[in-house]
Length: 250
Image (cartoon, rainbow, N blue to C red; front, side):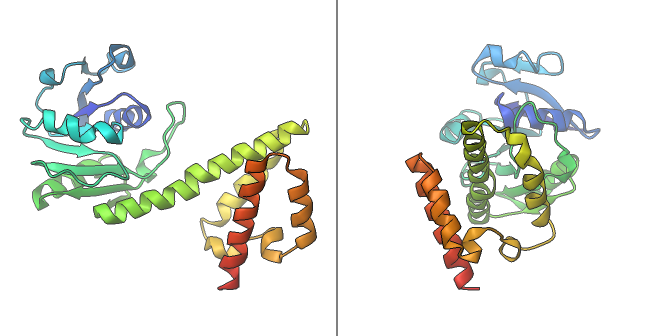
């Protein structure tokens, strides 16, 4: 049984806690957070603490923390013998002893239920021995386990911002446009599902549709005239131009 201490109590920490607690080969033995009220959700299943000096010995210390505090927290727990792994997509592996990366490539919200076995885990460690342990631990909760370098992971994180964060923002704009004309956003959900389904089996470039790829100038002009929000108009023009340039090269 691998013992794990989770540092953090946000979205990623909550889901990692659930994933490991559901595993027969891993157990979260302690959760740390500097705010005591954030630890209430974990108290029934694991020990909790707000004091780094009270961390117990474990096989892995999983830092599910904001990027700007990861290095500082890691330095403060260097006396621990276990692997110190962070879950950041954009931070490089730390230079400290027994450092590693345990990056789940997924978007996390506390209210969402996820199939952890299908989440890709991107791993990196500063030794072959630690990497072997990481792979074993990751395989306890997922069948999608990859050895990925810091440079590759940072590239993946950049791509993820486009396909996830930016796409969700476009959903929010679409919702706002619907609301402005008293229409429910739900009408668009069948289209969203089909668009998402297509890229599961096709290259996104091969299934692009819409007025931009058709170079339908009259529709594009009408859309721009409908948009009263200048920010939305700029986004529409920029993405339209990007689609035109992309498919001119194909």
